[in-house]
Structures are given as C-alpha cells and as structure tokens.
Length: 189
Image 1: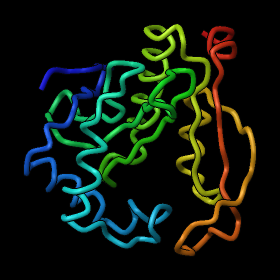
Image 2 (image 1 turned 135 degrees about the horizontal axis):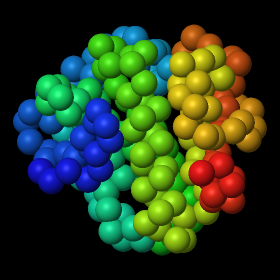
Image 3 (image 1 turned 30 degrees about the vertical axis):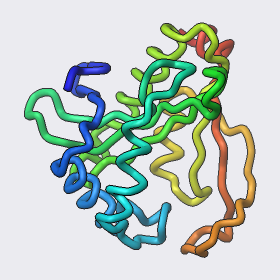
C-alpha cells in the first residue's frame, strides 16, 4: 500500500484488510497492557477484528476523502508498530477530528506516538482548511497517553464520566478530553 504520511522514523499506510492485518491487530489487542485502559486487559477476538475493526479501519470518510486509521511501521526496519487514528467525528464535516493511537509495547517510550500524532495534526491542519479542532480522550489515570496528547500540543479541555458497559480499574476517576484548535496550532507553529 502507498505511504500516507512519513516522519523521520515512521511510515503510515492504509491497512489492506488482509489476514496479516487481522493477525497484527489481534496480537496488539491481545496484550493486556496495551488494552488495559480500553477493555481492562481483555483481548479482542479475531472475529470482532474481522467483522468490526477491519471495516472501521478501511472506511474512507467522504468529508476528507481519506481513511481515519493508518498502520504504523518503523521506516528503518519495516517493523509494524501499531496504528494511528485521525478520523472526522462527522461523516459530513471535517471540522473536528479524533486523534488516537495504539502501539505495541516494544514501541512505548520511544516517542513514536508523539511523532506520529504531531505529523497527523500538522497534515490535517495544513491540508484541510475546514479542520477547526483536534480532540482526543482517555481515562484520567492513563498518564502515558495524556503525556502524548500534551506533547502533541493538545491541552486539557474537561474531565467527564462516561457510562461504559464494563467497569475497569481506574474508571472511577473518569475520563479526560484534550483538544487543539486551529488557532492554537497556528499560534504555536
């Protein structure tokens, strides 16, 4: 697949939806540390990956003409690291997008999440004049993800409590939403 975005160390590509993608996503979502703040560490089944996650990753959003998820590889080695999300919140408008990332543990602490997030933010604001706001959220106790959001230029907007079907450790502390507006991005370039 063609490269969607390159950084110094990363290549972001669309997923193909083939069996190799299924296996990579299954391995990622089977690591209890990777899914700790998402499912409480419970793995995602291959069937769910095939039926729900792959179609979500392959969807092209009409308002941007792009997908919302990209497979991340280390450029130097071709090693698959995980994925990034930069997805419009509405199919009709590119005004607000959600930033997200899920990387395997071997990629943690190496700056990949921040590097990929910053590159997607810059590309989004540069190429989509209708983009006004980037948003990201996580559990309040997910300090690693919160640091990535802050290093990527987002600031804390609010604390909130979501009604999730499953209670996981730390959910009693609620969620946090971060954002970066176009105005703030332009001011800090």
